[in-house]
Length: 538
Image (tube, rainbow, N blue to C red; front, side, top):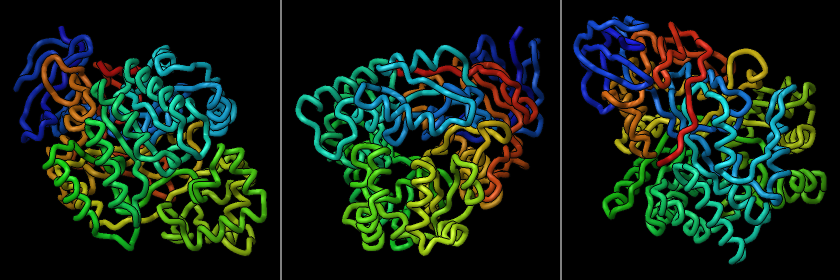
């Protein structure tokens, strides 16, 4: 007797093949059999008539690890049909830690959690951190990158300088420990401190260590606007010199001044591949991104960490320097407010009740709400009141670039999102709708409505391609012996329901989600199962 039998579905196997009718049987957490018809008995049978049965989606770019230790249900993740996330992106991970970085990391964690929740960062090594996550179940499977920012902070603190030879050697050791513990590669966030202070040779040295363990170099590059081509070339150079695959995080063309440049970026990738550099990209299907509001400030402001940055914000003379540099720019700095305009910067989250009304406002509206003389004044006042713990959405993109990147054979899907839900403590602010809608938007808008992608190709970009990329070789395909991660969708109704103004809405049309053989979403409803696991690269 099988544990689970999914019958009468249109099977899309994840490899890009055309659909076919069939049944899928599951035993002991794995796919036991796939056939046109399976008449054997099962403990539970799901009727997939009129539905599509495909591998569980694999999120190639996730920040779920920001709170999986306290919010293990991961409801916004599984409601999209995602059964595995590759977390630890943009250089930011909760390990490794050292006495040079622990206090800052703890303050950041304390600021991010809802009232009544706490998490003491007691571990030091990457292995110890993974062991902490393994103590209980998860809504979805979680594989981890190790963040360069965490490695740099643990090895040399948050100072804006080059590492000494001894510090670089320590950072190599921290990278090696993480890879031995099961990290899938090295991630960088080169617009964020302390990654923004790292020069290319430093990253190459750490990427060489990741390469020794078969890892991937996954980068939020140094600039996605006017400096896009230079920043992409740096990422390719790192992969080429370190000898490992390159994954470009959330690839985009983030400035009106270079709209259409995806033609050039995709050509750059093909040229790199022609000479042997294995470069691919992930993308979320939106024309806006999201990050911390502190990112609007020039790089030097962040030297020494968040407390040092806030102290500089309190200095009127230094504030005037910040204002000038936002207005005029600094060579090599991705200046969101100066380049994209204050009207395109929206506040997504704050922690104080007094400032809750500004959630969802752009900075021009925030200025008016506060009665501030200009947007920069409104910004620095808000950052000081929130102690830097405020988020933002930035509108930057062109639909033509979004579609062109999406159609590239080098493209896979990622949310660039953390974990949240539609009610309760982990429903807060107005997060980017990608938290709830990335996969349903592609399937509903770009497959069914606009026919930008074939359904089979979209599923490949969501399943076997990221599985192959990161080495999750027992997931991402419907084959006997693979882990039974399944997503069953209604192709006629699957759609994003989340919006920028009203983001906390689960999608429609994701009917069933099976994680490691356990039904986790049943008829569109979360079952409460914590069937996901911490995955370690073998």
